[in-house]
Image 1: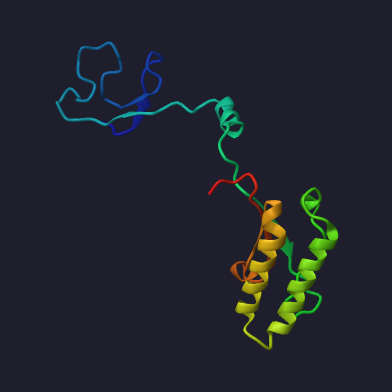
Image 2 (image 1 turned 90 degrees about the horizontal axis):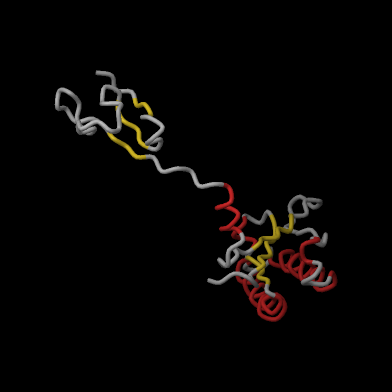
Length: 163
């Protein structure tokens, strides 16, 4: 007996039965056993949901996940840890350029000075203060760049996200 799977008649399109089993779905014979009474594999395949189901899920009232905005590292000074002060367009309605530039410049300055001190403590202190006073009230959060391997600054939009 062959062990390949085949689809039964169009009356039962979601059912797969091992070859050698009765192909007539109206047969009185048990489809889970073959003529030699050996069990065969019967698997039911659920149909794929239509594309509209995906649209419904996306447009439902489920809480939205946060959007991440990454501020790239500035490699013009190869060994210095600096981040670009180029203003991301996604922040235009939430944060003004001066505040953003001030924050990134402060972080860059702290990293420059931090080479002499404990980099991690200074960065965490600065980020906590910036998050509390500037970013959290605007539905944003600065993530510690050490968590991203110092490749970029990450600003997370958390206004619509429920934790």
